[in-house]
Length: 77
Image (cartoon, rainbow, N blue to C red; front, side, top):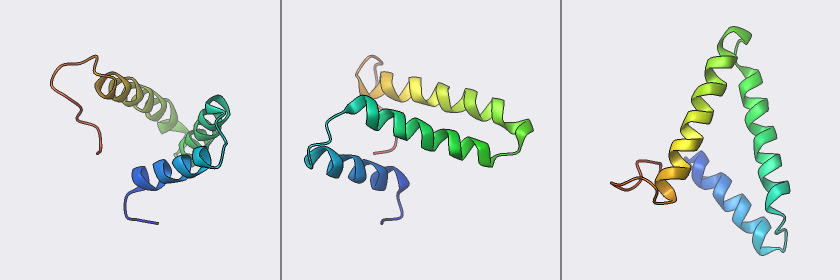
């Protein structure tokens, strides 16, 4: 594992994909479950804000990496 969680996750996903696990819906569902587990680590009073910020970041990153926004991506890597 590296010092970059983003890179580690992407490497694990890529390895699964290369092994033939191409069910992207299932992989995305597992990643969402991990995000839910992470959110549940936060104090209950912080969870709704954390969910909102995570969803906002998700939308922003998809738009940036998908090329829908000018100026390139500000997302990690």
